[in-house]
Image (tube, rainbow, N blue to C red; front, side):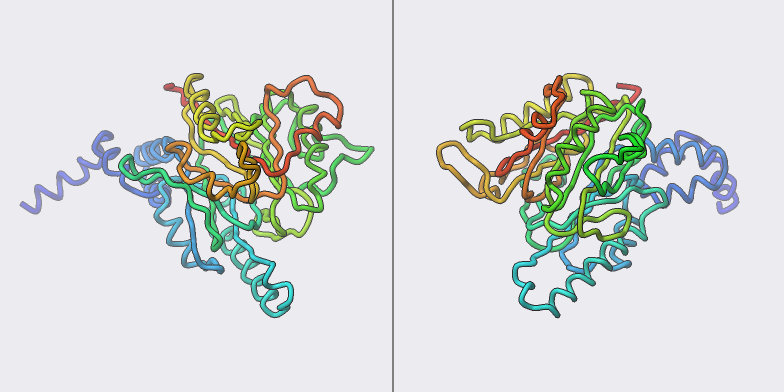
Length: 370
């Protein structure tokens, strides 16, 4: 009996259909290992890995992210991250009068950002910021009601996988305009013919005025189809494991198979935040794209109809859709969409900078089969 089993074992693992069924249960890191067995295993492993285009959100409640925690998360990831947006809660109001406590929190933040970056696969793009409150939603299954969480503790990070035809590029912007001897392409380190679809900007309070100038440069260089989605972080920015205290970080997402649509949820006196969000999700589906993730940048207080101001925690309780969503409490929101075309003067771009608003962005992808 044992001899028959030994003979059938290698034969079973050479049948592509059976091998595909077995390997689909493995996480991304294990698929990278099985891809080294032979050509057949490599082709099947990489096809499975590249077919997983869902975004995931992970949350850690501790102030310090340890290397062991990141190892555990990465070992169980079913997708290999290519982009990570990292948001960290930081409460500075109670530490301004306590220098020792402030220094301790600063060390924990620096170590957490570095530990996360150091454990990610090579070439993974990472950036983020500190925030007063982290907002996220990670659907579990169709039976679990969608619920949005507003947390004042820990770290949340969204991981974007490899998606065919989509590229991620990030840059740290130190000035609102390129030097006189340079141009926007050199400043963004991205060619002008790149099919950019979405640029996510995160600035600090002292640099929030940079956003309209940068948005004008993006439109001038890459065209009116680009969605510029921006928010103002708390007091620190993250990029590739480093903690910055000033300026702006940006993500450029490009590719013909990628689509982004965004809008302001609280226009006029309309107190219905959910209908505009649902319309953005449906707009992507009607055009043949599959929504993969969404972003919400909102202030602590959001204008809500006749009620003047209401807490965003009260306004956003339910989830907008069944796709992962990540966001933070901003100190200024900026949303420039393809419908805002034909503007050429900087004052027209400045008018898109808002306060006490809620902006929402839906990002989608289209496979070849679709």
